[in-house]
Length: 162
Image (cartoon, rainbow, N blue to C red; front, side, top):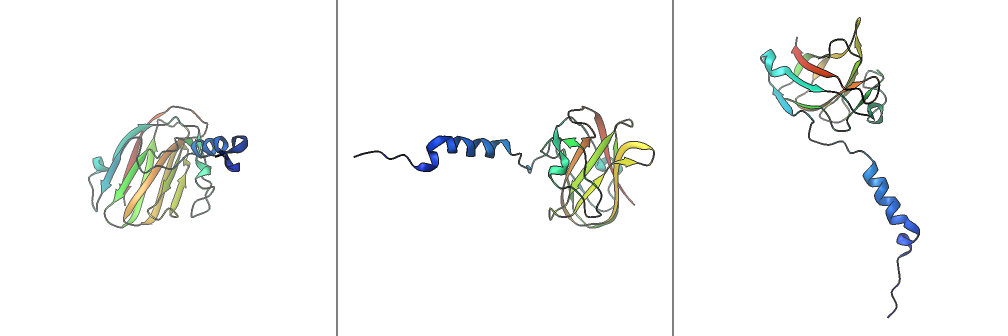
């Protein structure tokens, strides 16, 4: 009996397919610095987490513009830095990065993966923030990035309810 090699595997196609699959970043469901849950009238300490930037993955690869047509810019790890679980709907939240005025960016992906909010400079500060209405109950993936790839900056992320 003669062995016949499938044509798909001929010429290195399998290697090319495997390389393409493993080279494409996957948006994970875990976070670099863990998760936190918030309910109505949460204590400010519950909405304060820490981490550091340092990735080279372009956040615009997730989406170019958010729901308000703001550009989603910066570089971070392909895996989100934080996962925020809102246990209730919130009418207004502000998410602020404090990195001692270094040039940070934010991308926040909501529970339905379409409710994306992006932030860059806050007023005269180079620290990023997002202040918005109608935060629905659910899981939010948060990336804290930098304007340039690979820059490591320690930061504190604060979520405030208005």
